[in-house]
Length: 236
Image (cartoon, rainbow, N blue to C red):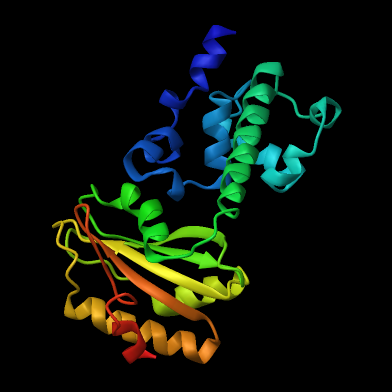
C-alpha cells in the first residue's frame, strides 16, 4: 500500500499536473476546482491520480456547495475515498462556510463617515508594496454588503476597470459604492490618473444609477478623500 500511495503522490505527477506547486508559485486563484480538490486528497488510488479522483468527485456532486449538503451515504460509491480523505474535504467545506459567515458579519457595519472606511481599509493596504484597488459596496442604509479587491498593479499604478466595478455593484444590488486604493510611496496625493479614473467612475455611476460616495487614496497613516476635499462633486 505504501508503494501505491507514493506512486500516485503529487511528487510523481508530471510537472503540469502538480497543483500544489502551481498554487505556491501562482496562487490558489489560478487552480481549477479539480486541482484544489486534488490537493486536499493528496493521493489517488490503484493507478488513479488524485486529479482523476477529484474529477470523479466533482462529476458526482457538481459543485462544492452540493458537497456541503451530504452525509456519509452519499460518498460510498466513490472508490478510493476513505474516511481520511472525506474528512479533509468536509473540513475544507466547513472552513469555507465559516469564512462566509465572517464576511456576512461585515454587513452589520454601517458607514457614517470617511473615517469609518479608512479604519477598515487602511490596515489592509498601507504596508503593501503594490497598489491594490478595493470597492466597498453599500445598501440603501449605507451598510456594507461586501468589500472586494478589483485590481492589483505595479508599485505605482493599478488599473481598475470602471465597467467591472459598476457591473459588480449591480450584481450585488448595491445602491452606492466607495472606492479605495493605496499608494505604496506613502503619499496619498492624487495623480492625474487617479483624477481621470474618478471622473470616469462618477460618470458611469450616474448613468447606471450607482452612487459614488467617495474615492479614497490610502498612504502611510494618512489618506486623501475626493469627497471630503469637495472634488467628487465636480465630477458628477
